[in-house]
Image (cartoon, rainbow, N blue to C red; front, side, top):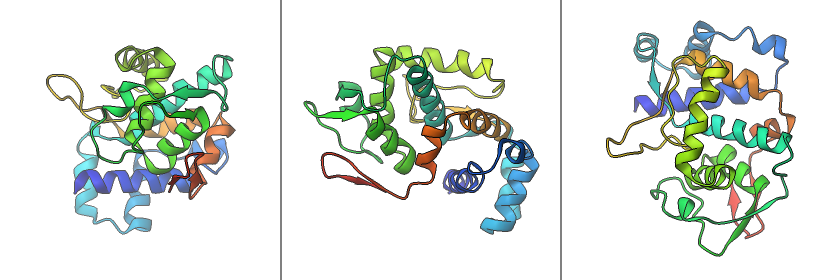
Length: 212
């Protein structure tokens, strides 16, 4: 239940503030985030205090935003385009069946469709597919995530997967702080192409599937 509350607060915070100016967004700090959760979402203050006292939290959302960032950087460098077609990889089909698009071998999705599936409905297989196509495989992609996080000043973040699902023999989770969330979200505002997905309610894919 605690994880669901945090994820709800996080998604609501993004929906509300990613549309604001950078100057306005810079004013959002950890305390403001908690007050937002209490006042707007009516989350019990006692439950919020649990997060305030724990500087490192489990979040499935932050790894997906880091995945989106690395993808956008590859697009900016010219390595990929939104229209680039990517054949489905085993990395996508082997993802645990929880919140997945249900991609199958032989199918092809554009970068834009994968990004929409990941950002609008948090599809875990879409994130894995992006990772495998950007870096060649998920392991090498994760190896890029943590150094990039350090570059951005995400001092409490540690990533073990592109989608936030536990990975490895020890089934380790990705961790972050509220400050990490605000810093990464602030940086992502540099990519208008990405921000449009935060405002979408749904998107129909070429397969006929609708993510919402």
